[in-house]
Length: 304
Image 1: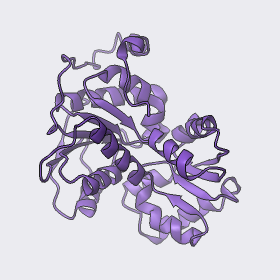
Image 2: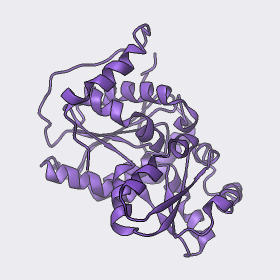
Image 3: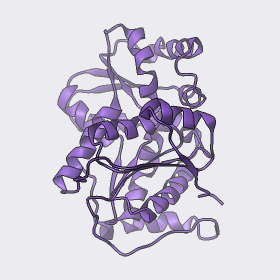
Image 4: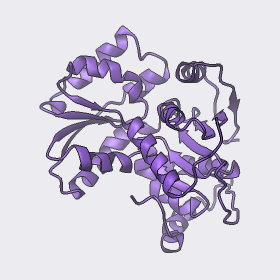
């Protein structure tokens, strides 16, 4: 699956990136010795805002015994319109925090960050934790379940312009065609809480009727925000197009990895902690929507 990395062969990537920040005093890094990962260690999840909560929710539903630490970089949302260099800097800094919290697995719960920063994050984290992105598990699923199909992909500009889904799908040699469309208004719309209103239905429809998504068999929700509008998308297609919810796919893959590595937590119910870089009302409302309880948000001054 490609989630484990011998850092001795890949440190050149990290060293090259670090040289670009030699004169930036605000970039500091946490370095620790390689430690064993207790089963009770948490799963770390990060995204630019509320999108990654779809994955946090899916993981909690599938593995309620696993403790979760979630970091929403609300100060920089959305990542989809940021440069690859900026996303890489944000991602490494956040991973630094998650390593300090002794996470056994770090999930990059953002398609844009998975496309732009996955290799760098793996080099930085090394053997201190398992690193998983949200793209590779979906590609594996497509290879197993969607052979010889034409699939649509909606996502941020960063994800779509990277071409990563199309390249990886082509490499499978399973006759899978990807037709992509950048949908930059959707993530901000969801962040502001407009994902169950008439205005959201109009915006969604304007995107889905575009010629770029004509004659598809399935639609990949290529942004972790988008499961929040899955119902509206399914209503638009009226069962004629399979809407692929990536959050469930990724959660299943994380369970498989933890099982294979004998890292599943044997406890009854794990704790959940939510950190944000900048407090927003919409973030708090969305956590309550997903978990059905009052969630304590901790503003973590990671960028100070």
